[in-house]
Image (tube, rainbow, N blue to C red):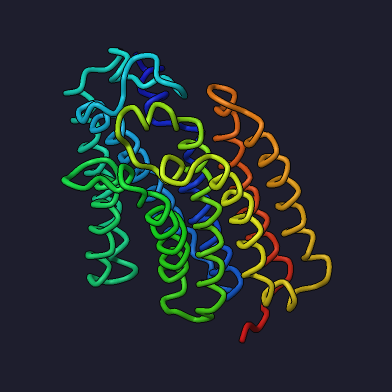
Amino acid sequence: MIKKWIEAMRLRTLPVSVAGVVAGCGCAVWQGKFDMVPALLCLLFAVSAQIASNFGNEYYDFKNGMDRKGREGFRRGVAEGDISPKSMKYATFITLGISAAIGCSLMLYGGLWLLPVGIAILLFALAYSAGPYPLSHHGLGDIAVVIFFGIVPVTFTCYLQTGGWYGFPVLLVTSVAIGLLAANVLIVNNYRDKEDDEVAGKRTTVVIFGRKVMGYVYLFSGIFAMAIMTPLWLQLPVWALLLPLTYLMMHGATWRKLISSRGAALNPLLGRTALNLLVFAVLLLALFEVAGNVTFL
């Protein structure tokens, strides 16, 4: 039974939430103000919120008739009968409660004004699959991922360590880049599930625009993410260009496998795309630590 719950957490996708926090820590390091405690709290909040969202996705997609036995992709515990819907619902809200408690502790570092931000994040965790207009069912999941796995975690992780919005241009381009790379994980997921989603009436961007178009969106999202950070790359030592080049090589290799694979063969690419993102975030943090302060106008 424990194995079924671990599967429901979708561990292969968790690097997405970790990467946003790591990149935010990189921006704090760039400013010379890294603080371990709020950084760890941000990490716990982000990961627990994603797990809650994954649990909620299992429960609400089953409830809404989107999941069925034998569906492509990873085994879905509720649809396959491994976990009862009631248990998954309880797990969703218990995990959301844990996230909320961690979020409240972050207000010690950022103040009460962070409360609506935390509420918005937790509402997104549910609204992705639940409510009268689930985001993932209407082609809005990709935009939501850019915001809540990129812009929000990067900027607020940095803010909670630095106490201000210093170097906001660096924060902004970094957060958008991370968000675009995170959205690629969702593209792989929806690329794999296209036929099942069509049958269920789930209007993902892959269903709306087709595999060919979204395959190119996947490719150019990675390229654009590196390109918007060009002003930063140009102010770092020449060797710093190894970071975007390394990422683009990994990204290109993953894209080639994406467009040539179908069904369960895409499962490893889900984790690989998430891992590519995490590697980029970790190397970016290391780069900021080694390169030291840079100006970014």
